[in-house]
Amino acid sequence: MTDTPALRTALAYFEAWTGHDLDGAMTYVAEDIVCDAPAGRLEGAEAYRAFMAPFVRILTGSRLIAAFGDEDTAVIMYDTETVPVKSAPGAECLTVVDGRIVRSRFVFDRVPFEAARRA
Image (cartoon, rainbow, N blue to C red; front, side):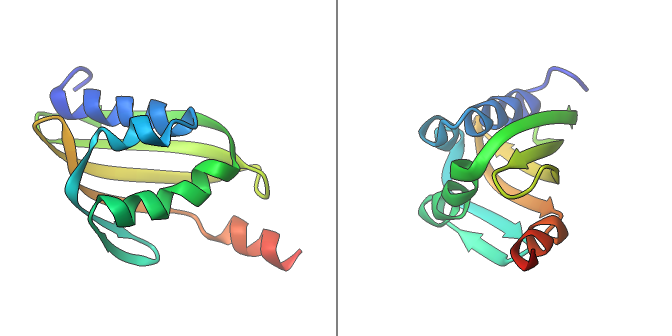
């Protein structure tokens, strides 16, 4: 589906953080968000902000690859460019309740960052 409540929230959130507006992105994140990311589980908006902030600071570009959603769930896939890495693909499966992201399953490729650290 292309215009659903969850997808609208997901795209607004994506536009905000990729535009370096973390405060704006956090308006779409519930206080009690649960996020499962490669580094482990994050619980709460404060932990989620602390997780996202360093990445947003090094972000230099982004490209949305695909986005789909229904009433409660949205999936966004994108490629990001950062200071150390030219291509860092990622995807999120988001559960949305009342316009806020309550759950995120965050997947991204850590290999480019590990290669950049070794170089």
